[in-house]
Image 1 (tube, one colour):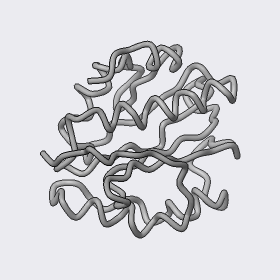
Image 2 (tube, rainbow, N blue to C red):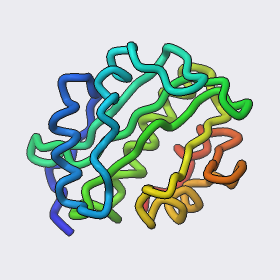
Image 3 (spheres, rainbow, N blue to C red):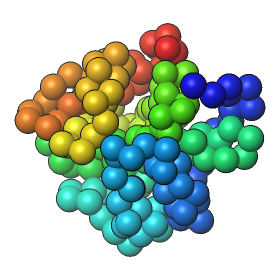
Image 4 (cartoon, rainbow, N blue to C red):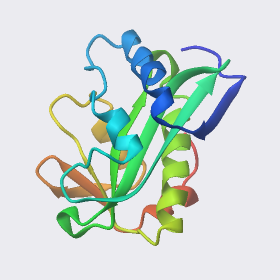
Length: 160
């Protein structure tokens, strides 16, 4: 673990994609982020059933991106939103960064009137993904998928 005294968060853009990819270098077990993420952030790549409103946030320590998340409106699985990605560099895990990123995304979903939000946990998801989803109130939806009936409850939970 590394100290996070200078932790900050901000909205991300396609200009951050290269730095987002760099934080994956600390985790040889996790594939690099989807190369289409820049197009996703620019609104020209659309995951299945994705709607246009979307957002991404980065977590920074000493102005270096150590984690990120992104989400969008959707109609997939009868949900109103989808958490597209959430990643934190292994050196910075278990310090509340993922929860902080998720809380930012939950506030955005709330501003979009999107309460029911889904997330896929694929075979290449880190082993911590499923326990993390459980800890922040997501429940199994179907094979490979979790969901929050009301994503705003994430903001009521204590940060780990």
